[in-house]
Image (cartoon, rainbow, N blue to C red):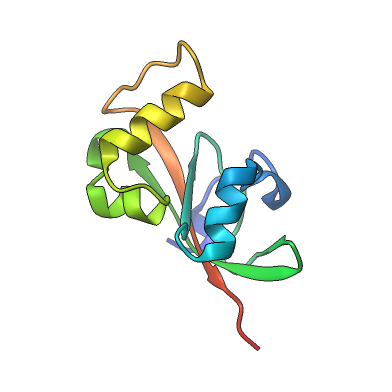
Length: 112
């Protein structure tokens, strides 16, 4: 999917990864994707965390029911269940519907 086919962003890339534990996972290389309920970045956009630059390689829509343990590992967790429990702890009362769509933002460290 190219940027032209994507709907407008609903937030900015600066808000993509904000929780300190998530920032640490990105810096350690154990988190290479973030799922959000809106679109925060365009493909090719740069996110800066603690002086390091990360480029957004892919942005696409996915339903929660499509999540696999591999997707959870991209988020820095071992299993979908661990990821789900953590997300629900951040958002008390939020339902977890398998058909609910989220935006996946995959990124990698920019190397010089």
